[in-house]
Image 1: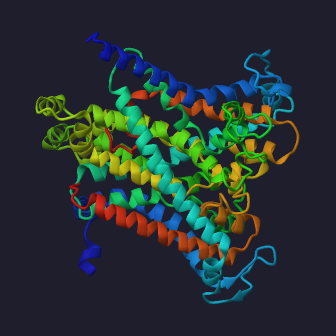
Image 2: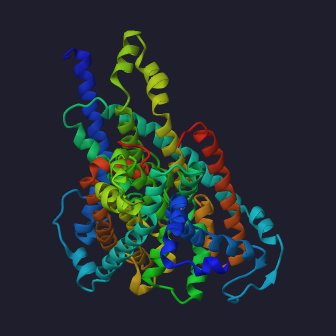
Image 3: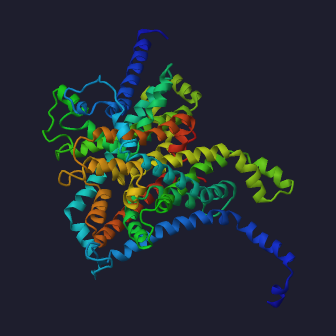
Length: 309
Length: 277
């Protein structure tokens, strides 16, 4: 021990350098991992603890009573939370599927590489660049029952519009929210799928054509399997973004009418930041976090299991 | 080439292209029109496609009383702050994940990706309570800090894809010459990937600029960002749609410019570097 302490300062650097060198990659990653862990561990642990208490922030700044699993029971039994779960799943599944199919169609059209179509491709991405909350405002204006452009277009084609407007009627509101998302994110699928389809080698397509494969067969059997990795990643991203939908709903419908457009994200917002029901919202947070983790884990397991990194 | 069928297909393609432009760009132009049309024509039925353009709404939001002017500055401070703070964390991590063989690399990368898909609203209420308790409520720093949950994982993924493209031979040569790893990273690799760092910063900026959930909860009146300012018009009743549109147009401009200027990198940016485009 004393020998180590007595070592001259000049002897120290090599030892330290070798420690640094041995662990260099981990030392470089550590700051970001520690920062992120600190930022997510606090909220999760805080929510875990709070979820076992009755705690309304309007009553007092500290938890009011220990209630065990009551908040979880209450969350699962609350109809609005069940509705939110169903709406969120409908939005996520329908949204991702519609955007993928429409985006793929547009990508195939862009692939015909006619002069001028490059401009279409460059401009097409613009909806995706807009903040979701602004897309909310935009569509609230377009859907306005009095003078909205979409309302007017549908009316002039003779389609029946509910008198309370597309966002005001429980039968159309969720579809209207979904349409706003499809408008914003279809270009995302179109542009990304276009870029990855471009990278499919021409020789493979030519060879298939010589074998008299139909365009449909080429698409389903050659092009799509070759861009599988890209498709897997963007479908997952989009599904989860849709699953977390919150700002668009806040502006468009505030979850209404009734619970017809309530999403999990909006439920959390309402219980936490309008009702200040911290105990209940913490339980809902953990339920949501667990659902998200299960979905992501399953998806990652199946999508990336054969990947090399 | 000019068989009737081919000509028909060409015409169909162009018709499709025009239709898509109308559907996807039309609404944006209609919102821009709302910002510069006379207030009383906003909800005219049938819609008025021609009108006398006016900058009244922009004057209202920027000059008199100009509520949104400071919010543009706030948005810039928060978004730029989020990007600047993220770099010292994400650049070394991206370098390590690109250059070194390390155990669990796949899991670390997927962990970052998982964070990008976490529901931000789930973290908001605890942050709100914590930040109120430590007296940082309404500060720029609180928003910049919380935005790191998005900007760090995003930048690590995107930046790694740029560093992956720098040939390892360059670093090998320097290593043979006896250069230390830090010198190699700082003097050789990072200057080469500088364009990649700029592209990453630009898209991370858009990410932060467009975020509304965090400022909604964490900002104060004096630090509110542009999307929150837009929400403010919404709370008041009356004919304020021109102001909403004008503020929204301001919020739209920087991301649109960045996407159009960095057109080549849009696919890569949107897919966190996993599709080269």
